[in-house]
Image (tube, rainbow, N blue to C red; front, side, top):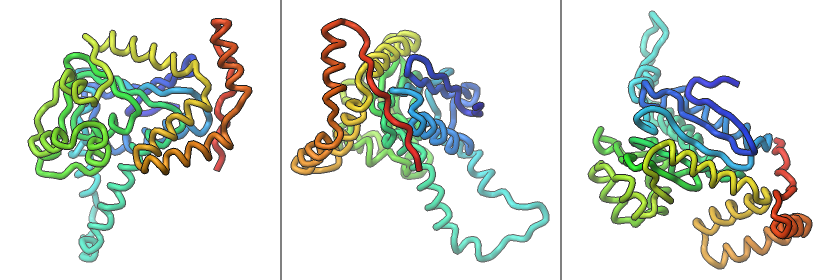
Length: 282
């Protein structure tokens, strides 16, 4: 399928999703918010890959929300029509529903069964932070930087910055970034724990991230799914709840055949012959 904001390829159990609007600094227009969840859910629901890599093109990973496109869409009205005086009474509810829809577009990254790796070059600005913090891991090129830009245009970030960023780096740093809108360089982001590693340039970064993705794709998919599910659950629950949940999970999900295959493959120094996750059906 063709998309306006992304190029998608799947090889060797790795899905590579590339933001493809460099001339627009990969800003997030109206189509972006529909296409991204559709791509992720298709990969996940149909078990098309064991890991997803998201990268970008041009000088910036993403400049964030395309405000002009949203304002144009919001102000659009049929030619010759008269304003409905009742519209302003429900404007808040309409805005709330739209924000919830946009939040869901990133939450699918967190909710999908396979790991999602972000490879970030240049600016990761505004909504770019919301996108990448919903991923499992983040990697950056040396010139990359991160900016919670919303404060610079007089708004409070609302698509995922606060609930996710505050779980990834110290609260004081989150507050500084959000109150000032300053740039956090790649090396500082690594020091704070926002990114896993920094590479000298985009080409090197993407090559190394693909090696990590290949390593993940070589593991038992059901076990990887379990790891992602348990990490997300443990982050949001008490230690006691996490211990109980992993007990219940393995009581139903642990597969001795997959364990024996993993051990045998390691002993024989060969690729494991693992079962793929089943397709998800409504």
